[in-house]
Length: 177
Ligand SMILES: COc1nc(N)nc2c1ncn2[C@H]1C[C@H](O)[C@@H](COP(=O)(O)OP(=O)(O)OP(=O)(O)O)O1
Image 1 (cartoon, protein in one colour):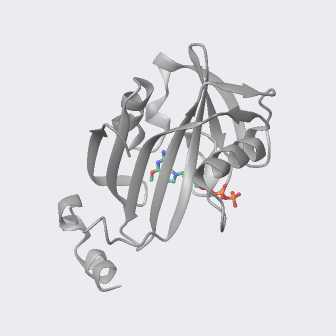
Image 2: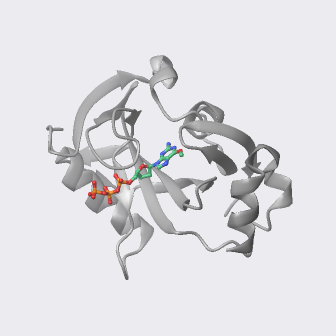
């Protein structure tokens, strides 16, 4: 709490390097699941929740007792009505917001699925050419790590946000998690 109070007062000075990320306790944990089919990727227009109005991948918060991989499958089923097969973790994403909220996220890639995407109350899905991802309509961090992931690299990344605005970032390519 002391750290958050300090952050609120001096948020212009919050830097990734000043935070002890290993000890940080995240407010919530979430997943993203990018389903790929040939040269297309399944994205969503997010209709509610955190990031409403943005383009993102299906995903959401991990439930109590649930593994991240199960959450990635369940959230994709719930939001776009398809089942990803064997999603693989490609990114660990650590977000701190200056209002005190923080989120640890894992991003998964699934190269096969069953079902046909359909719109739900949470998301309107669409297939997008992988080389034309609309980063200007997505969270600001996505353009920094998603291209690496789509090139088969594994990524650990750290971000400071003030509402929608990214204040600082650090993206590392790693051999394994
Ligand atoms: C801050 O930067 C972010 N970048 C990206 N790419 N994705 C983000 C960022 N912040 C949050 N997200 C993702 C992580 C989750 O997939 C969703 C947020 O979860 P949501 O609000 O959709 O949670 P649900 O459990 O699905 O909630 P409801 O079912 O109640 O809508 O955003």
